[in-house]
Length: 368
Image (cartoon, one colour):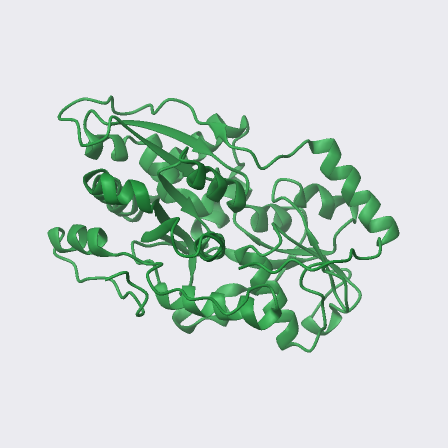
């Protein structure tokens, strides 16, 4: 599980103080928020084995499958009279907490958060049942301070959260370039600051950070502020494919209500097919959902490149899950995990087969 070390890092005077002020000023928390009522399709038709399914997600473009599936009513259409109770989160650990507490049944989440949740529960909390997105993660920097990876020494880079998917990716990248960074404190040759995505653009504008390894739309927000893409994470993966968003289900809910999980997976496939067929309409639908959740829509200068940078996929890309966990071990954030059983693609393969498509690769991690 995620390692916790004793001791605290020395305070990096001006930058840390400025960042702390930004965080406090924004009042940005990681708690769940109730999502608005599903707008497009009412809960009608036959009811499945559960009266309600509670779906968790982030109001982020990398969760576009969930945003479109909810906003367009594609999930509800498959669920019939089984109602959706949707809630959004700002961080993976909060969503895992909610799933462990029984207030989320199915969630869209980053793969490292899923791994951490699975390992912390000794393999009893969740299963990864499907995929949602690949790519859409970039290292964006201040071009006046950084023009190449060799310029990163002494700079301050943000990631969304300690031990999260982007945090591990940045630490692994820095280690590969010869930079030494303490994985927990973030202190070292490069200062890694764990900063909520919502706060990163303001921190960048104020000079509290010099860049960030972040998912969309935050990466495109930084570019709109004058940032330069130093690295697209796709370039580090074979064929540019790596899991950004996974679909998880509570093991308890999966066992009791497989028909409901299957229905949500059918809705997920429908949402991704809709995204592929009509990118302009689905991009607008996702933005409406973000506005309903956060009170603010993304401007075209941010939304358009962010949407274009993500590959929405039904494939859980389980091989990249194993690789990402290995990166977390290598940088010192994770003890060697036993991931056998973290993936259960039984229902996904059933849905894919019904659509005339081949089964997904489980990379040897399936519960079967």
